[in-house]
Image (cartoon, rainbow, N blue to C red):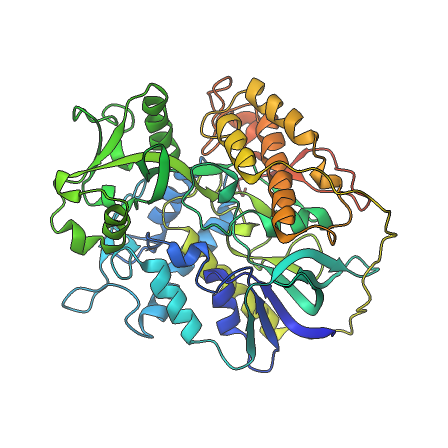
Length: 525
């Protein structure tokens, strides 16, 4: 059956739901999600949403903090527009119901997180902000929105004019269906599951970015991966995120004998930028020295952080000891599909919003609690454009490339992909490890697979993971400096003269990759 929608959204996080909730009722909207509506990263988000609404705060301060955290690799125009919109976005949701935490006077409670100069983090349910906002947005969806769960979208459909007209998807029973749409939106999140240690949901494996790349869209800044400093770490495994808000409330990173590890490392100590804190913890762990969050000075910890308490207790950790063992893990992708603030990609009819997109807001390292903000902003911004669009007739016949019989490529197991990426392309990188990973990835030639229909959903997930791993590895090799979430031990210094520019990667129509070009300056002039 051929299905024609006005707006087809792939993904069910905050960016996707914000968009769907704000689209006009006369638009036919469909949401496809690979698992369930409430399994996205957004739903799991413990941290809050940053907005300069405090008495002594101002968007210019928030902008300065964002640029500093991003090591000035940001698109300054994008930063200023999104940051200035934050107070209005928060006010709108806050006025709709009890989404955010307030004091007895009805004022929003504001928390502190790393690299912020003011208390400006709005939370919901203590440490369940993502869940609160997602539930709110789901409750506002109108009858023009159709939701289909357990649908694995895997290929963008293009017509003869190279316009995106929908996606091809695989059903749980293995059947294949084409979904046609005037506007196709990728809101599929980042790629956290490429690494052994991660805070990301199991579904976040880079599918949307890989699909866009295979279709020829421009992808940018893939070397910039943020590793969150504090995941619960037990028996060599990470078990869940310990929000930065815990350090914002006074927790201190210490060794087993109680020695603080961030003294003298950064002026903000435990609330320093995430890449600085992550690298310091990583140094200790590589030397077989355990690192803990000392939470003994936080009053009413269990009431203040109910979700974190549940994670710890479910894994047998007694919080009465006042310490939580931690390790850094993959948390956020600053790069992604290159877009403007409306989510427009280099392919007509194709949009990307949320973590799958790269607007330039985050630069080389995301400032804490700016991600949910970006999702809300982009969802609203794109809805305003689609609501006012006048639609032209669309040629609905996709390009059908001649199918060349081919045997299935032998693929590695997912754990092997994760482990090699963590070891060679993780928190600390160098040329030898990156070259080894590049050679290993090239043996599979995943980016040259033209016919995905014959692969299972698990196999396609592996293919997408290998493609994203390739993009990250090659971008990390190309950037011979250290900046934000990209740290090269063989090039430990920032190089502002040249490397503030971005690297853009895309495939030509016949699968040949273009050269890496440093063509877009990162700072607005």
